[in-house]
Image (cartoon, one colour):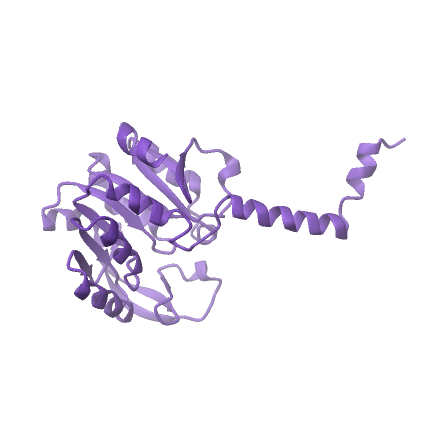
Length: 262
C-alpha cells in the first residue's frame, strides 16, 4: 500500500504546484540578486567601498557608453580610471563622457589573453557586444574588427606597478581577460576584481567553478556580490546556477578589504 508521502509526490505535477514552483523560482532569483541595474545590484555599493580606500588606479574593462566609469569617478575622484571599449560607435559615447570628467581615460581597445585583432559581434546600438556569438542565442549581429590588448603588457607600457580595482564586463570573455593579467595576478598586483557570470557562461563553457579554481590557485578568494555586501565563500555545486550577475575576487591575505566588503 502506498504511503501518504508517495501519494503526495505522485500528485505534485499539477497546476497548483506549477504556480507555486514558478513563484518560488522568482523569489529565489530575487534573493540571489538576478539584477543588472548597477545602482541596486551591489555595483554602486562596491564602488563606494572601494572609494574609501583612496584608490589610485581603476580599470573599467568593457566600458560601454561610460555610465560605469562616470560612477567610479564619483566615488574615486582622485583615481585614474582607464576605461576600455573596443567598439567604435560605443567608444564615441565613452569619449564624450571622458571629455567632461578628466580622470576617465578612454582606451579604444579591449583586453584579452594576448594582443590580437578579432571580430566582435555587435547587437543593436550601444547595447551589447561579444566575441562569442553563441552566447547571444543566435540573435542577428553586425561584425566589427577590434583591437585587443594584453593586460600585463598594458600595465608595463603605462608604468603601472599595481591596480586597485578591475571591473570586467565583457559578455563571456572574462576568463580571457584574466589570463592576460597572469603576471599581475601571480604577484598579487591587482587588489580587487569584479566580474560577470551568468547565462552567457553556458555557451562559453566557463563555469563558476573555473573562476574559483583560477583565482584560488593564485592566492585570491571569491565572493558573490549582493546589494550591500560580498559573500566570500567556498565553491559548491549548488552555486552553479547561472543567475549571476557579479562576483568579486580579492587577495586572500587582504583582511582590510575583506572586512570592508563583507
